[in-house]
Structure formats: C-alpha cells, structure tokens
View 1 (cartoon, rainbow over the protein chains, first blue to last red):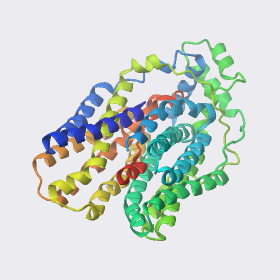
View 2: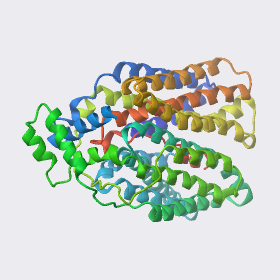
View 3: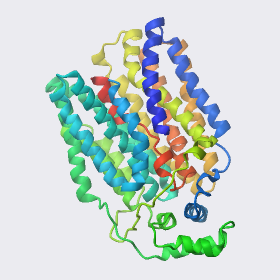
Length: 78
Length: 411
C-alpha cells in the first residue's frame, strides 16, 4: 500500500510537474511543491508515527496474537 | 511511458497478498521471469502502439510484484535486529542498478542499437533466474519443534487474555501456525536473506558483466562485500521450515490506524520527490544551464551513488542503535525519517532560489537524495517493526522502484 502510494505519487508528480513547468516556464513552483511535500511528510511522521503498534493483528485471532507476543519477547530478549 | 507505472501500481496489493500464499521466492522468480520476457518482447512489438502499451503494462505488473516479494522474504527470513540492514542493502542494490543502467544504456544505444539495451537487460534477468533456481532452495524442511514448544511456554507465561490452555492448544495445533513461524525466525536467523541479498547483488554483477566487462568492478565488489559481511554464511541444510500461514488481513483496522497513514503519507511524499527528480532533473539541467543531454551522465548519476552508499550504511547503524539499546525502535525510525524528509525539502528550497551553476545544483541534489536515503531506516523499516510477520503481505509492500525507472527515462 505504501508502495502503491509512492507509485501513484510518481504518476501524479511527473505529470503535475510537466503541467506546472509548461504553464509557468519556471522551476520555482515545482521545487516549492516537491519541497513542501517532503516537509509535510516529516511533520506527519512526527505526529502520526508514534505510540505502540496498535492491536490490529492481535484480536483477529489467537494465533496472530501468539505470533506477535512471541516475537516481541524474543526481540526484547536479544 | 506511464503505462509501465499503471501496471506497477496495480500489482502491489495483490502481490502483497500473494506473498504469504505462495511464498516469497516463487513470487520473486515469477516476477523476474515475467519482466525479463516482456523486456525482451518490447523491441519486436514496438511497431504497434497497442501491443507496446500492453507489453509495458505487463512489464510493470511483474516488476510491481518484485519488491513485495523481497519484503516478504526479508520479513520472514531475516532476524528482526538485522532487518534495517537488509532493507538498506537491498534498496542500495537498486540504486546501484539505477546508476549502472543510467550509465550503460546510452553506451549500448550508441554502440549497438536501442533494441540491444532491452535484450541485454532481459538476458541479465534470465541469468539471475538460473542462478536463483540453482543456488536458493525454495523449499526447506521442518527442523525440530523446540522453538515451537518454547514459544508455547512463553505464551503461557506472558499472554494475559487467552487462557493458557487455549493458547497452548492453538499454538501447538498442527495447522500452519504463525507462532511457529515467528518463533523460529530469530533463531534461524538470516541464512536465506543473505542468499537473497547476494542474489540481488549478483544480478547487478551479471548486468555489469554483460554490459562492459570489468568496468566498474570495485563498485559492485564493495556492495557484495557489504552484503556478505553482515550475514552468516548460508547454511541451508538445517534451515527452518516456514510454511506460509493462512492470514486474514484486517483492512479496515489498518486504514483506521494512524501509523499506517504515517507510512502512506511519507511514502507518497518521498515517492513524489523521487520521481519528479528522476524524470525532470534532466530537463532542469538542459533548460537552466544549457547542458546537452549527452553531457548529463555524471550529473545524473552522482546522487544515486551517494544514495546507494547511504543506504548500505544507514540500516546497519539503525540496527546497531536498536540492538545496543541506545534508542527504541520508534525513536530510531524518527531519528532517520525526519531528517530524511527535512533535508531534501530544505535543499530543494535553496535550489529554487539560488542557482549558481550546474555543479552546485548537482551537489545540492546529491546531498538531498543522499539524505533521503535515511528514510530507508525510517519508514521503510518501520513497517517491519510495526506489523511483525503477521501482515507482511499487506503493509510491507513499500518500496522503491529505482532500478527500472531509468528504462522510462530513456524510452
């Protein structure tokens, strides 16, 4: 899904850039947009990528729970 | 040109779903065979536009499968504390591929014809498949059940919610069980992964061999050394069985989860930047600095060399930071991801207002793209922290596509 997002971003980015550069004949907006997205990504990371992994896989069935519990134990034990 | 990307994008999610079903290695083999075939078919069908478009979409489909397959392999066969390293090296391999393709494709076109650039890359894929089939066992046998039993014991001790008896019963049931998978994983470590990484390097070696004899050997030698240096020698005889468990993907829960959105947003923003730079920077150089396309080679290649080098190192450092308990995984991802986005963003803004010379622009872009490779130990590995083994197929399909994008550029 993340990869799909990156690929879609590629399709959009390449054509949007072509449009902007064709319309303004300048790279200013192109660089601003790209830089803005990078910075937006950083901010969103600070806001969203925190906290424990949610229990999304845990309750679905016990085997999954088992796997993640074992995983975390082994991991912490290393 | 964008036909390829449609196939590529479409393939991701089903590929992530297929990985656990049929196994990462068969999937990866299928992908490489498929894309090599359609690469080789491209010149013969190029006279007809519809046929060409179909070939491009199918090529994209098969290539789209490859990174999910690789991620699946990494998630399954690489011990947790080495996953950053593995992701870093594998992705660095794709940067090196970009560099080599960028560098050699014009040479091939000059000396032979554009048809040959397709045939040669397709042949490289074919060679990889042969090596992969003979060198990597795709099925391995079940080892002792010691790991499973200890897993069950730990469950009894640790698991609060299900009753101990139920936990033991479920985890020792004969059906394909994720717990056996997870518990055997750190123990048997990274034997397959090292094969995988070596394969990945090997395809580059083969490409290079096909292309120009011994031209830039040191480059690959260094990469291969890095690949073999980080992992144990492959001893697959006593390797573990990992039978793909049947999995349910909680789609809705994933979409409601903020960490998943962090991953999607960051991949989107990073991917946007990557593709814009990849596809438009050549025009930028020619329009702003009047450099002819033929002279662009080194200006274009430098950022990817740095990106590859950073990619190789960054995962190793991240793994060390976590295993030595300097930082938690979450802190480590933040330490890499945030600069990996902020530095390229800031440098692009500098570039927007200050255009001294082509070399200056190249230096800025090189630093920017090198910094962006820090995200390999950020978002790219975060997914492995975040959904250990269980959902691999689904979230962990994030990756880049650097190796082949150059095909587009030269078409």
